[in-house]
Each structure stands twice: as structure tokens, then as C-alpha cells.
Image (tube, rainbow, N blue to C red; front, side, top):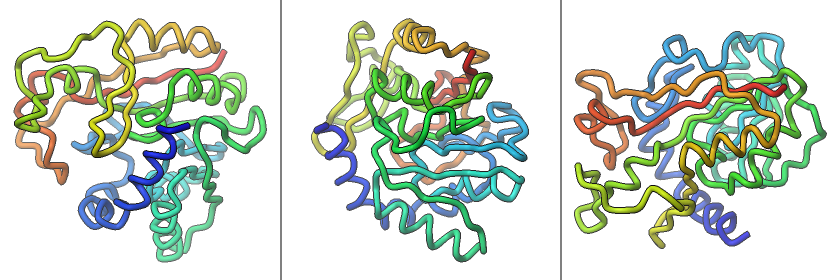
Length: 246
């Protein structure tokens, strides 16, 4: 897939700079998105102790490291070898041990029904084709297993001013029919309307438990310069889907 190749090349080239800029922020354990909203407020994962867990697009696997400390049995998957090298370094430093899998999220080389929980924080669900990832997650989950993922809401894409490289208060792109956002300079991102997401989940036997729209906290700061805290106080820039398999 051309988008897989593009995204892999981007993350392999950018991994060192990305981790240098954001690793300290991402190491804030058990928190979501660019504002690091605590999991105890979001409630997306629940108690992972004793569960088989797949981090679906893990980067440097900061989440998996935290869940391993909580007694989970994580597997961390990413298609970028450079990002997984950072994960391996962090695991060695922490004295932690769990599998790191270098593979495309749209075709995971793991058995059906391998996991009690699949999740990602701006991972594979942002950069892969949902027509392939949603069925793949359903395949990997056991009956009753849980699926949680954060990603950017549609709104920053729809109000983005390319010339000024910032979000605005003006709609600039159509909501209906959106699917792929490709600037030609960074990652290839995937986005669907809410109805399209729901139909894909239902078609794969996934039941929606909640949709948590993350709001930037008052006085929020982040290491991500292309996000605007004042904007994200008024409109949701990120969200967390919570689902389970029937």
C-alpha cells in the first residue's frame, strides 16, 4: 500500500527527532493525546492486569511499558523499525520485557482471538485504512474483548489553513466524503465521518460503549506546536472511541 510505505518512511526518518521532542511528555503514564488527559478521567482501558493487550501502532511503546507495570501482558506493534528501536531502548532501561512486532497494522501476523484488549493513542487508527484496520482489530479480539483508540477529530482537518499552517474558525474542507488527508510533506492520515465510523464498527461486530471528546485543560501546554489549546478548549480536537466485541 502506498500510504503504508509513505508513513513508514516518514516515521523511520522522523523517529529520533520525534522522540527527542515528545518522549518526556509521552512518558506521562496512562494518559491520552497531546494534552495527556489521564486515563482515570477517560476510562477507556479499565483494569488491564492479567490481560493480553495489543498496542496497535505503539511508537516507542510508552503505553505498553506502563501497562506492563500494571500486570498486563502487552504486545507492541509498529511498522517503523526506528520507532521500535526507541521502544527497545526504553524497555532495556526499565528492565521490562514484552514482544515488539514490526508489521503493518492492516495485516497483523498474529492469530485470531489473541487479545483481550486492543488500543492505540494516535497510532494505527490514524495512519491506516479503516476498511482494513477495523476488521483486523475485530479478528484479533476475543469475544467480549475491548477496543479503544484516540485520534484527531474531523474538525481540525476541516478548518485547517494550509497557508498559515494553523486551525481556524472557518470551515475550509467538506465533511461529507472525507477519507484521506495527504499534505504531501508528512504522514498520510485517514478520517471518516461519524456515521461512516459507526457503520464500519457495526459491520465487524463491534459495539460502541462511549465516545469521549477530549477537551484541552485550562492553561494546557503541549510539545506539539501545531495544536492550539485555546481552540481545543472550544472545539474537540481529539477523541477516544471505546468499543467491545460481541
